[in-house]
Image 1 (tube, rainbow, N blue to C red):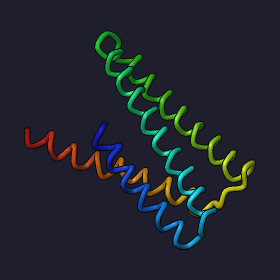
Image 2: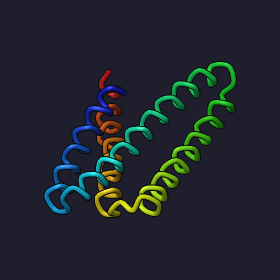
Image 3: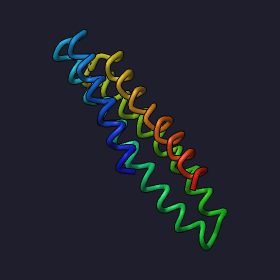
Length: 121
């Protein structure tokens, strides 16, 4: 999990720098908000995976159900955060959504590297 957060943080910092360059302070704030949303989303995923792993030992169906609930939870969280950020506090959508999307790529980067390491073990 630590590697995932490091990759995400690096991509968020790059997104913040890019947003600041093109949009100024407003872009930096929006990118920070989008990146923060992505980090909290990653922490929610980690917590849910730990809980599902524990539950799967005694009841595999409950573990799977917990994972599905986690997907819905993370989707709802992101949707609410986007709505609040764009609709209520009027942050710029491109840097907010762009930085969030780039940070989510860390899942793919981390997932493929982790899968390759597991295959070689």
